[in-house]
Length: 146
Image (cartoon, rainbow, N blue to C red):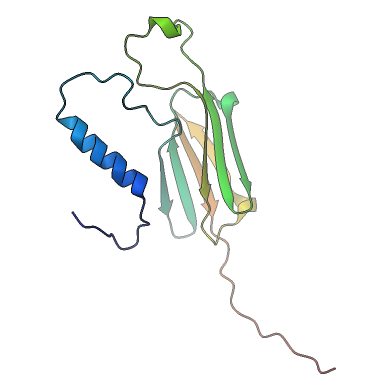
């Protein structure tokens, strides 16, 4: 296993999580409460020719409970997954899907046109299109005397 991967930031928590997963794979006991599910959606960020596309898996989240905002170079996705109507907390025998509020914030790539962003939500998948801003070429600035 390589210690350093070129082009990827070092994330010690991801490495720790991977090691804990590897250790728990050999345990045949049910360890209720040892590993909690993530309280935010998993995302993919793809780079296309003229845009970036962020895809987030958020099944079970009603569109009314979803908010996508951008400010100061960051994109924030907030939501709330409501618990099943028929279930009370004391009736769960096994609970792997979390419910409740969550939030995910990511830093946008440098060249994003924030005004042209678009978000679509269908079948539990949120797709945010982040158009690339036109590249800026350096321009000469005239220096006046005096």
